[in-house]
Length: 434
Image 1 (spheres, one colour):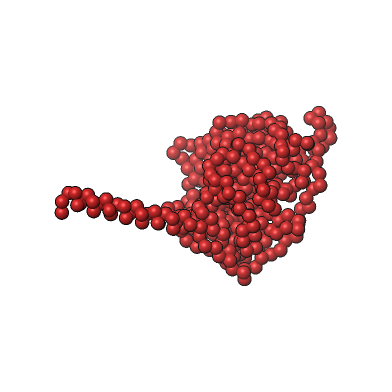
Image 2 (cartoon, helix red, strand yellow):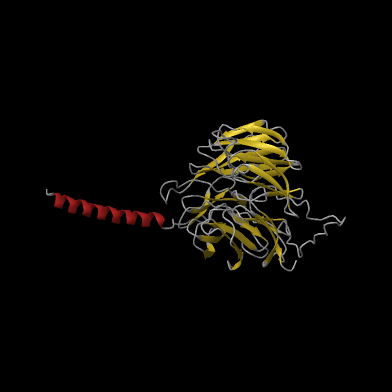
């Protein structure tokens, strides 16, 4: 065979390989087919917390009146222990907003803060934990607890609990307990691997995962280990707690329910399978538990709904790319219960919590990886690809707010103020008429 013929044959083979690869890429990027198992129980829930009709006013700075929201508690990632990411709030807490204060910085804040005792507790990616006065935006204290961190602290019994990916150069992670008033380290426990799992506090215990697949139950008072559980893969997300059970996913594509009391496994379920190549089938998403279901996103491009009692698959909702997003779950009075989440396909979704049917979809472009938060009748999310934060009407998906700040997990609130996490700066926003 001549050199020219060899070249032509090689070129033709290359073209065929490229075309085949293109077909493979097309096949891998198509949204996966949805599943709906109608026989999985769905538990109706009453509206537990009424929506306030007005925003509580803040007393003047020198007033002796007690501020009803001064000690409002947003105890950790996802607001509630079941991680629903939903705060019923006054319909008056809506845009347009005015900026009350700004807490600047140059280091990434990948996760939103916790709130308690009149302070916001935020953990920057360089391992610096900050306490910020939520009224003034001024620093109350700062404490360096590691060199790399990516989680939201948890608050309980006057203490702040925080995990770090690395406690020092070349070292593994750790978990710390600090005095919420002063920032004094009360105890720390060194871990054999990294952790970016946002802790959940309950009673005298804290629960979190780690990259070697270990789930920890520590005594909040002194950090003593009460029990551990070993998952099949890395547990990077936070754990959701509901009805005496802890729910979480791992990087091997399994979702678990274990007993809170002793860490014994109740059930484990697997995903439908990879759709988008390398890294698919992994759970980075923190589950939300509501209506007798566990809702959790996966890098195979799906949002999943499992029975919280036995792990049976209820439904899946496919998207065009990875779903790193932790979901928000909310039911407004007179409305269907909804699950909200974003995808790397650049779209933000609202689906029926019962069956996964799409209610609306907001196509924005970019990449959405962080978790949304519902405050009142608006769902907020950030776009990592565009570095923006958007607010959509829960019922319609219509855009009502946009700010050129944000990347991952956007907002928390005390019902009067929106605290928005930018890429490295924290903002306090209030309605213009307030």
